Each structure stands twice: as C-alpha cells, then as structure tokens.
Length: 187
Image (cartoon, rainbow, N blue to C red; front, side):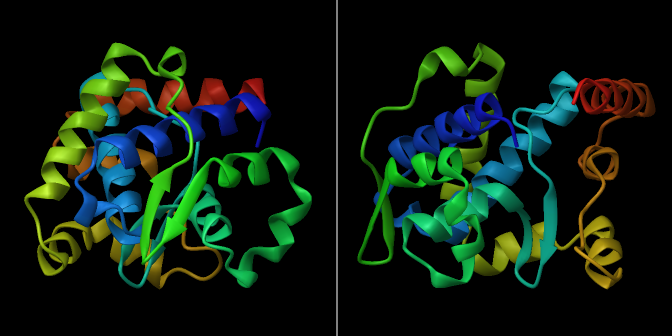
C-alpha cells in the first residue's frame, strides 16, 4: 500500500475514533463503521472512500489493512509481519489503546477527507451508534459475505457486490467497477 493511501486510512481511522461515542471505540465498532462508510461511498458516490480490501471474517466484513493497523495499535503480536512497514507502523502510532478502547493521539487530517468522505463517515458513525453487536452481525452477514467467507484463500469480498447488496443500481455498480479497474491500473 502506498504512503498516501495509508495517510488516507489514517485520516479515516482518526476521524472515526474522534467522532464516535466512547462506547463505540472498540475494534469491532471502528472496523464496522469504516465498512459502512465505504459501502455508503460506493452506493452514493460510485467511488471508494479509501483503498483497502474488505475481508470476510467470522464476525463480518472488515477493511483488512485498517484492521491490521488497529491490531498494531493495541500491540497485537499476530501482526508482527507488518512491523517492517514503517508507514503502516506510523499510522498505528497515531492511535492509542487503553481499557479495550482506542483513542486518537492526534487530530485527523481533514485535508485528506472530502466533503463526501465526511458525509459517508458521519452516516456510518450514526448507523453503528444505533446498533448493538447482534444487529451489526445480522446486517453485515450478507450473501457476498457468505460467498467470500466460504471461498478458499483470503476471503476478500467484491466491492461491486457490496455496493449492489446495499441498493446501488447497475449503472452505479458499473461505474464503480470501471473506477476500481482504473485505480488498479494506476498502481
């Protein structure tokens, strides 16, 4: 992942942490908020809010690099392979962890977030704040989650299917897929 992509993830994570209620600053709530924000941006903007693969894990979909950054921030030994990635480590160092809750050690760089990014983030923060764990699990275990979770390998979900299941019409899905293909070609 490029440094500027990690800087965007950092801005997204810090924004979520700073704007979520104290009881919604656990790893589960943060990654679900990021997932819902990404989904919202797919549907209403036909573009990704941030670059990250959405992995189907047992308790639902999570942005995989973002999840790894949070594990690094809480000093989880299972992500030691990432310790060599200084840019990822720098993002993790901007986030503190205490009493099973994350906190921001610095402010989110709002220059990295567009108006539409903030709208999607705010909608996702509000959505997660009104749901309990079981409601989030039920809402995020979609057909696409089941397809990806049952697949061999890394269990990555399709961004187009995430958008489709959230109500995007086929013209939006087609535009989103074209945008994702273009962004991938640039890398």
